[in-house]
Length: 110
Image (cartoon, rainbow, N blue to C red; front, side, top):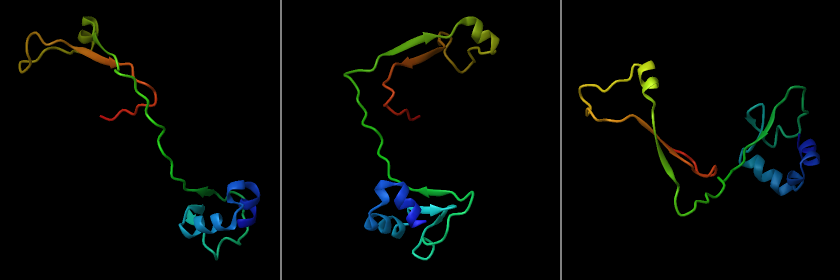
C-alpha cells in the first residue's frame, strides 16, 4: 500500500509525511486505519483507500449589507393550502416570505 500511494500521490512521497499520516490514523483501507503492520499488505480488488483531511471553509466575503426583500404569498396559494389566520393570531397578520440575496460563500444556519 505504501509503495502504491507514494507512487500515485506526490504529497505522500515523503516518508515522514506518510509515517505521520499513518501514526495519526488518517490513512485507511476499507475504513480501518493503516498501521505499520498493514502498510505492506497488497491492495486487493474493491479495496477502498481513504485519507482524512482537515478542510477549512472558504473565507466569507460580505459587502456592507445584504438586501432583504419581503414577498407576499398570493391569496390563491394560501387558499390552496388552507392557510388562514387562526384565532390566536392578529387579524391583520400578513403572510410573507423574506428573501435575502446573499453571497454563495455565506453559510446559512437556522
